[in-house]
Amino acid sequence: MPQLPPPLLIFYGSSILAGVWVAYDGQTRLPTRPAWERFVWGVGTAVALPVFLPMYLLGARSPDRSGIWGPAEMLAIAVFFAISLPLVAGLLGLHPSLLSLRDVSLVILIQNLGFVLLAVLGIALRYRLPLARLGLHGRRWAVFLGIGVLVGGLMIPVSIVAERAAVQIVGLVEGRETAEARAEREHHDPINRVLESTRQGRGLFWLIALLALAVPIGEEIYFRGVVYGGLRHRYGVGWALAGSTLFFGLVHQQVIHFLPIAVLGLAFALLYERTKSLVPAITVHAVNNVIAVLAQLYGWNI
Image (cartoon, rainbow, N blue to C red):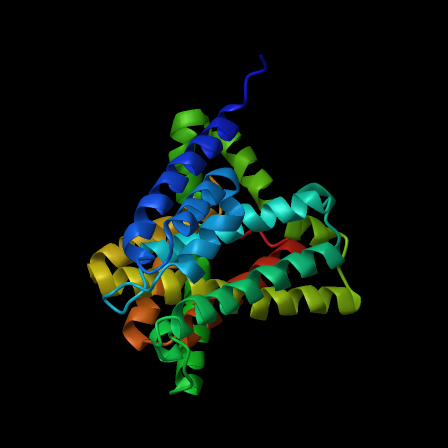
């Protein structure tokens, strides 16, 4: 009998546990629905978690009585983007090492449009909350834009120091040369590989526009508006800062760059906490992405 790889075993085990939880949770969150419907949601989640769990948590499940979204909605959106979308991409034959500019553009647009739509439809409209609760408002936008540009410039040397510190820390475990090689590999993600073949013309400007607009807007709406905002409303500022920062660092799935990414995530959350607007965080995020592109294009050692 063939043995399943550990990641698949973990996935199937998690699916079964999630299915049991959904069937149990449905007793209180779907009180007016027939028992067979709760059974279908539970079995569906156990068999096809990427499809059924986000649909249950963001659609079928009744909103929390507190009137504020929480971990369930955060998890639903995370599952959709971490499992559901990659699964669809794999079925379509998209592989990170083979992505073209067209493929990368499509993935970026779908992912970040999804962040916006799920945040608005699954949280703001579902809980009947104003978009300002997600940091989406135009008050003092010019001032916040200027703050974002200033902080964005200040965060460049901070990120450089954080990356060098991470190399030193990881080097203590696996050796300095191995840590530096790992950092170099992490710099060559799919977007940078596409950038290497798109160094001029409209393709380059299009990629920069995506990284400076679509990515910061979509990611900040989710990571700060949804994740930080939800954690803050339920558990307070301290837990929200710690939780959202750790989560932002982990989802990028990098070792060396976990620290600089987490430091940026902390800065984004602090800006959001101070201004109650996503404009500064989006702007800093955009500045960081543009500087990263320019560094790749011109070989800057930063």
